[in-house]
Amino acid sequence: MIPDALRALRQTFSPPFRRVLWISLALALVTLFVLGVTLQAALGYLPQFASAYLNTGIDILLRFFAVIVLIPLVFPVTTLVAAFFLESMAGKVEAEDYPADSAGRDQPFLQSLIVGLRFTAILIVVNICALPFYLLPGINLILFWIVNGYLLGREYFELVALRHLGPIETRALRKTHKARIFLSGVLVALFASVPLLNLAAPLFGTAFFVHTYKRLAHAPG
Image (cartoon, rainbow, N blue to C red; front, side):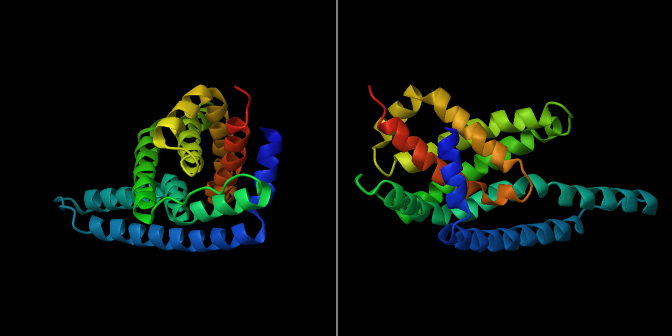
């Protein structure tokens, strides 16, 4: 697992991946900026109370919360934007490191979009629900790694495996190696918990799970 992660790490910051990283980062920041401005503008339409002090206090508190709530959205939004490029990135890793294997099939754009939106929605909802627990020292990081390790492991494995297998075979292979896939997902979640590096986590996760899938697919039995 560690050698595969190191290979993926090197590829994540190679020129083809860096280009996608900058594009996805720029688009993600624009998306978050628009969302933030929209939230701030929406707060201006809240009902007012009789006390000016109360109105000011509530306004400051809600505007602060509107900024804070964007923080856990950075990774999901970056993941969503990067999803448009992950198929091609998986193809580059396969062509470079596994030229003797049959090439994977790129999923149709609409299907990739639906899968990306579904996964991002789940990631956002789960992490917002877990946000109160993330504020508790001692268990916040562990909970983040466990929750996102499961989600990321499942998503990135299916992203890569569906390029070569049908849905039934993909689910069967995932269930057979669920412990390995979960631990690989936790490794991606560890990467995603490091500030700034987390912006490259979708690219790292894709490259890492190409190697993970190839190792599991070629495993005896």
